[in-house]
Amino acid sequence: GNNIENYEFKAETKKLLQIVAHSLYTDKEVFVRELISNASDAIEKLRFTQNASSTNIESSVDDEKSVIPFFIKISTDSEKKLFIIEDSGIGMTKEELIENLGTIAKSGSQNFLKKIKEQNDIIGQFGVGFYSSFVVSDKVEVLTRSYEKDSIGYHWQSDGSGTFSLKTTDDIIRGTKIICHLKDNCTYYSDIQNVRKIAEKFAAFVNFPVYIADKKQPIWCKETVSEEEHKQFFNYLNKNKSYDADKKSYLYKIMYKTDAPMAIKSIFYIPEEAPSRLFEQNNDIEVALYCKKMLVKKNAQNIIPKWLHFIKGVIDCEDMPLNISRENMQDSLLMDKLSRILVTKILKMLEREAETNETKYLKFYKNYSYNIKEGILQDSNKEQYKNTILNLLRFYSINQGKYISLKEYVKNFKSNQKNIYYFSANNKDVALSSPYMEAFKNKNIDVLILLEEIDEFVLMNLQSYNDSKFVSIDSYNKENNKNNVHMFTTEQKKELEKYFKDVLGAKCSDVKFSERLVSSPAVVTGFLSPTLRKVMKATMSNID
Ligand code: ADP
Ligand code: MG
Image (cartoon, protein in one colour):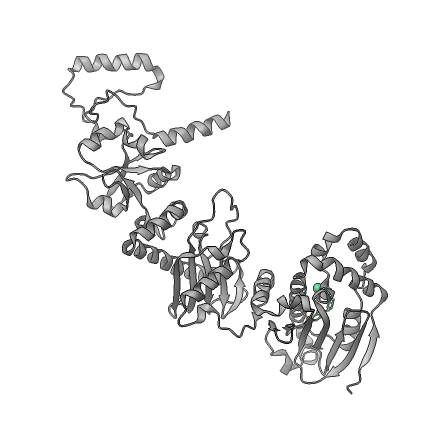
């Protein structure tokens, strides 16, 4: 029958409800987490029960009902001020409803209460469970049907003030649906976009797909997207950032869709402004992985490499299983493949942009050159992207007075020039007035000035570009040291050499005569460049 039965909450529960509703005032959104985790628990219990009772599964599980897939679905109704969460989990029988939602945790409830009273911030850790829904709701309805054979549906309802009512209900599938009638000051949670943001934060820890019933088509599934929509979505991705996201925009955007070799829909943004290397310690990958609009992973670390952490966006890949695991070989091969496709796409876009709009690209480079160079170093094991990243590098050319590519440097080789010459310095003026530079200026051979400390490591790591070696102009180099200086006789050279060695002692390993200098009498050269010497020195003194 449809008779309504009324019950009173157990005394402790009443007290708890008041405390919870009061204490959680500042952190209301935890109810989303609690309801998602209950839904996930419910599915987990059903899965466990099904697995455990394999001998007896026909009798304990209704065949028709058991084919309902595992899902968690969240929807809203902003007009009716509703927040709704459904799961296809184990459901509850009448007895379970009364027992589980009418009483707080069976054991240790007193303890739990005491702890909450003593220390308010403990709530976040414990989780206040189902009752947190009353923090945001005037009324909560629970529709549920147990997985058990021949079970019937129940409709539970309460305003959280002390009583709840119970009646049977037809036409519901296995699982539980919770409808929160939101308080007037909590209608924030009846906007699906707000809910999506919160749910996705928590859904990352859940083993089952959380489907957000958003009537609006997600931007990455659309055929055409306006600039305004891009801006809005970019702002949405930046919402929880400390800076004023509304004022920031993106420099580049990429929308990439393909059906082969995998079905991918993706959207990426490169923000105009790079996160500060000094202040933003958090290098989380801010690209989320979806499968058919359902969030699989919030931070797609295995897909977007660390050095590209400044990229924001979404990847939706239909071939990705909903519960990917890192241990599964199949999954990680799939991730690798997806990663290779997308990273190549992003780098190729940058390469193209660098060619078509130099000014814009140099703006990008000014902000992200460090990341690009990190890319060379991080990629150096596999060298998957080496050739493309090489094309993205820019260095200051003394001949052109601006940043140029390696390709351009090589294009302007003097006849017979084989090497790419560079000089590492803290600033351009120091570099230009250095005695090492004289011979190069005189012969009009271009030199690239490396202004960042990482540069030298990058070039040492690369060693060469196509067939041209990277050569520091202050390092010993055969080409520059043909021992055919005519200024001195052999005796004079011997004498000078002895003099230097006597004065410098162990500090001097060799004395060479060279024509590389024009107006300076001598330079110190060696295996280590000034930057590396500086780094070594700093390291050594740290060891002391
Ligand atoms: P906890 O999850 O810590 O046990 P809650 O207050 O969150 O405490 O939930 C109380 C109980 O209600 C759960 O243990 C479970 O038995 C039941 N329950 C809550 N939500 C669901 C659901 N979606 N499906 C089935 N049972 C549920
Ligand atoms: Mg719970």
